Length: 237
Image (tube, rainbow, N blue to C red):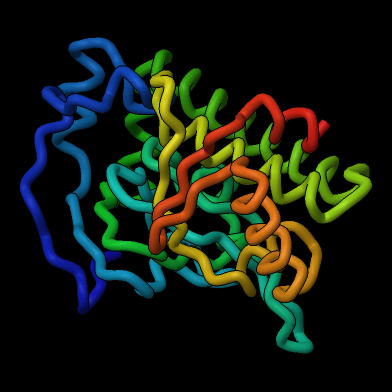
């Protein structure tokens, strides 16, 4: 599904330095060689809509670099942000496997690189390689787990502060890749953050200011560093 504002790039999946840290594309030699030949790699600028909810499924999108906002909009025009997809996530996977329409809208929130694979090619690939089929099932399971924890965070967290602490920790850990420092770029507006944790923009702004004053986080422009993950963990519990 090429886009008019996308730039095609040449990438080598076999020698990708990030492959071992990613669920779906961490494949054995034979499967990875075939996977590398599938689809095309496209680069998108910030604010590009990759696909829209309720549109017919055409391709699956493996997120290589960048971040993508997944959202759903009601008939009344209210938008709910469901997830921020990170490198290694497979977008549109459930719709591609089920042959249904896309359930969400996917929009880049920073310059992003995606591997775009037509549905028929992707289904043939996971049919041929049992390992790939298992990884697809694991990716869908991870989507379910994430949705479950997000729902639990919204329903059971007693305060906006605990929900925000949980979200910041989640992003910090994902960005750290096992390293000690938790540093990431905040590409969302305070309004977007409020949508994610079920509160108001004013509350998000106030809570971030509080976390900064209490030296739980450090903010430099759009960069956030988690200074006290243990204290945020207690707050999020």
